Length: 578
Image (tube, rainbow, N blue to C red):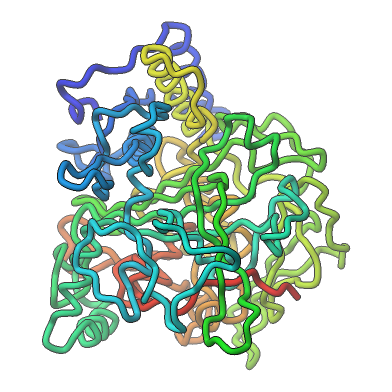
């Protein structure tokens, strides 16, 4: 990272802050009993309007990087993508994917404050994988007419706005597995049937938009290429970026996923949330229209942000996930973690009720087990102000009530906490130099980053890697955002989801559950050709990377789940929970 921003002044850190950061970085878990592991220092994190394109360039790239380097790379992505977007000189409208160097991060001046963030200008999945509308101009302002299968949703009340918002929340569940709620959010509003529900969007940048249109324009369209990709997944090497023989997205393809929710009046005034105008969907009451949804708009708060980027040395993508600082709270609404991710408390199981995962190599007609059960038949929780979720699939998941989140299954590691301290110190120094009194970006934290695959080859046991300086440890292997990958199968994902997507609702590590031979063989969910290898190696990877392998690469989408699935149906309405 040190050579990436030559010519741009580095953010200065006070000596005491540097000492604190280094001390935190040294406080990692031991790789051998009784032996402390020295953590690499966090590279300088700079507040600049630049989106990095490679991790550890010139020194082996992503496969040779340390966790400290990967964390700094993730923060540089977050800062560059959170910058106000540039505008076109000709039209004065936002120029998609492009930070404006004349603006500041967290700028409150009228012109810059009016611009969407750079990542918000990436095209939503419905703007790329459109059903009807043809729009070859990537830079066109957001327009969701003609994007959905059943027609154009209309406002639930009042006239349509002159300009559609950049934030279009057309997802309400996690791949239909479960829905996530914030108990601290408002309990009633006349314009939202489930005001505590966290809603989502998915976006992709110009590289993916252009490539997808190239595939559509092939003589046989995308279908034959996608079929060829799926058929040859286990036998061909990693295809070259931009290939039109096998689906392989261009280098520096970026996808984003974000979680948003309604805020209380106190939260709105706190300055701890990035807010923006959003569009969200509710059931349409007219029985004479085929359109299933109408929409409201409002100013909501950002609570989660995924960033995935394909780089030259990480063709499997680099996965970074961020959260707002206050996501996990106790019943009274007090945060469990601090702004850097440290959680001094403890003692409670990750969820109430406690959950047990049962997996098996024996395949039954119902595909159950694998399954998740409530330990001892414990009752469901009373959320109060806690984060909670409701499972939507009853075959192998506990349904019928809320499951409260008390903590993460895997705590944020010391290296990531140190990176958050470094980034927050850099943002504070930047704000001081530029006269910015406060910024919401001081209240977002990196949860973790995956930057190379590992394999869990023991399906009956959790991942046992123990190197805190790399991704070879459970905290990195099972990368999960607490409000995006919400329930037990997604928080501790490896293998794949049984019986397809979403299938029974549970996951398994046994290949026999997915049509493989009987026995204890492990299921491979990701295939990658390391340097020097022509044929790909199979991995049973965990967390985001493993899920994108199981749901994206296996579907012929090159680790992009939205590309693997293609055309968007209709916006999600709030789920009807069992």
